[in-house]
Figure 1 (cartoon, rainbow, N blue to C red):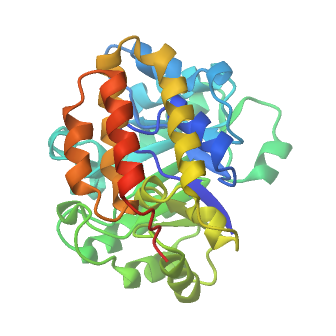
Figure 2: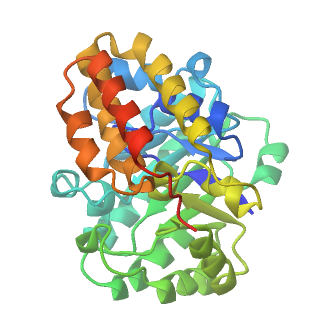
Length: 334
């Protein structure tokens, strides 16, 4: 089984990815939080830094693009190819209301016809620019022209899981290298159960390599998914790894994280953020946001989280974290 780390906006930038890889190796592939391809035809400074190969020290990194415009998408692909990336991932899954209102992320699923048109225009533009789109590694070996792989991270609809019946045939029409499926519709966000029957429908009807994504927060969750879908050879985990950094190690038969490992990871993360953030205020914003997830692995942590959230300096923050770690038991999920 291969393991991918899902992109989490505001958290899993390159300082986090590098710290995670250093302290808890075992992830096969990381994805960047989405890069916006818009009518400025330029990336932000943050996006440029986040995709800089010199700043990323992970085994495999795939830039994720969010857009609903084919020309902007192809521009973004070409920019990533210039940096040496041979795959990009299209975000058709973000359920955020502000993103969906713009017809991006899972908002692209609102109109299957428009989604189909987007892909048709995009692959036609790639062809016109002499870029070959490879569905797999053997395709790459067979071509001499510039090539790229395009994968998709998708939800299964907007309002109802039955909408997937219109979505799968669209993906099947194009040479995608991979389809990462989060088995909820946009309106469900991250609540309610995964529609396992819909992932089974993907397995039965999709012609692409599939990746399962959604609600793998414990080793038991992973084992249940593996039993349900033995055909699947890759899973993507997001929130589960934020709460328990040693989750993949545990899945592979290793030990749960120790308190010393968590402390080392936390300090490594701070060290990585210091040159990136430029000020205590920006650094604290980042690490406090991550503690909203990591605190879930410490029993009775909420009362101590109040002090972490109120900290105004790095010294205050570190003292609050030490207090939490000293008084709360590290209780990684079984």
